[in-house]
Length: 204
Image (cartoon, rainbow, N blue to C red; front, side, top):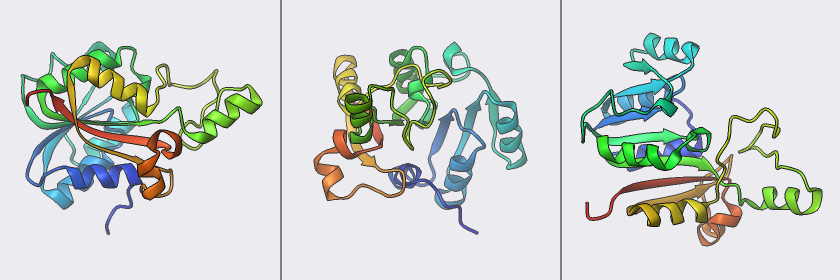
């Protein structure tokens, strides 16, 4: 039976070439790696902090290392150990996201990240009219119990990439329920609930 994936994960699977080697940071229960192994014949590892998710990865036959990404990943892998380093909806929960992007591109030829877009129109309306921190499908937590500590918009992320000399190879914006349509492609920072980026070092 084929696994039903979120729209952002569907796009990631399309971006990843068959037969490649992948590292999934904050891999959760290993669903993405499992799907890629079955559909794209990839190999790879997951890094995950939650022990229950680690056990699910092990049960699914996914090689996994239990670790806190805030402590860094340089100790585990050599330079260019992977074709892709993937991190889905975890960047905003990292204490030093810029440093982790650098590490992703040290051990991987390319990086792929997804994150909730804080500039989505629903978030803007809640802030402008209600005066409250937004609670949306992409940002479901209240301000006092959210794991997110570095929320950003699509424009913020692209500015960081430019500052760090990171070349964006592909970009997509999606809603919670569907892939991007024409309007979302035209106004991703306004209409995209989540953003997906594929990138490499400039000059690569």
